[in-house]
Length: 306
View 1: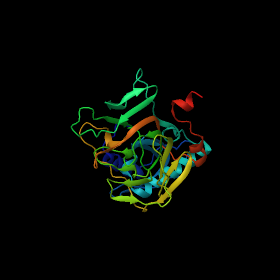
View 2 (view 1 turned 60 degrees about the vertical axis):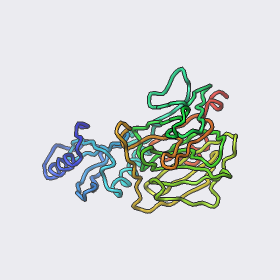
View 3 (view 1 turned 90 degrees about the vertical axis):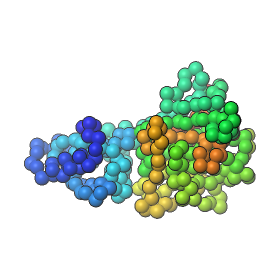
View 4 (view 1 turned 135 degrees about the horizontal axis):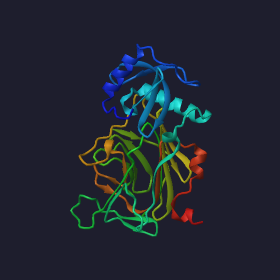
C-alpha cells in the first residue's frame, strides 16, 4: 500500500481499522504492539518489516506501509529493535535493513548514477579531490555528492577509504544544505565529529588521527536503540558517543536535492572546508555493522584487486 503518501491519512485509516472486525491474521504473525506517530496518535499493530526508509505494519490481516520517519523516536527505536530480532530468526524478509544500500566506486567508464561530480577526476578507481571549495569562484572548484535515497539515519553504517593530502579539512559530511553529520581533521590530523550543522559537537581526547598521504579506512555507525554514534579508524573503534535519548538528525533539503538531504559529500558547505586527497570507495548500510564486520570490510580497488 505504498500509494499512501500522507502519513496522517495512513494513521487515520489504521485507527479506523483498529475498531473493525477483519479476517484472520496469517499464522506465525507477531503480537500487536503500540505505535505512536509524531503527533502522539496511537494504534496497535504487528511489525512486519523495514525496507529502505519505510516501515510495514499489519493490522487485522491488512498490510500498510508508510515512512519510518513519521513515527515517534520511541516507536522508531521499537521498529528497529523488532527488525533486528526478525532478521535473527528469519521471521520476515527485512532486506532494507540487512543489505548494503549503496556502494560508490570510481571508474570513469561506468559512472555511478547517484553520484554528482564536477571537477572531481575519476582515475584507476580513485576519486581525486583538489581541495577547492565549490562556491569559491575558482574555475577548478569541485563538487562530489553521493546520494543514498534509502538511507535510514536512525540505524546506519557508512564506511569510506580515503587518503588526505591536506590536514585541517572536512573528510566526510552527511548533507549539503544542512550538515547533519560532519567528520573533520584539525591541523595535526585529529578527528572530530559534529552533528546538525555544528549544534552538537562531540569531543574525544583519543579520537583517532589521520596522517597526510596515508590510506585510512573510516566507518561511522549510528544506533538509535542505544543512542550511540561510533567512529572507527582502520577497523578499530576510536570514538563512541552516547547521544541524548531524544536526539534526532535534522537534515534540510534544497530544491532539486535528494529527499531529506540523504547524501554524503567531502565538503562542509557551512565552513567552506573541502577535502584534498583521494577517495577509494564509499559504502552505506541501513544497519549497524558489528565491530568484527567493520574490521573485515574490504574497501577500495587495492583491496579488491589483491
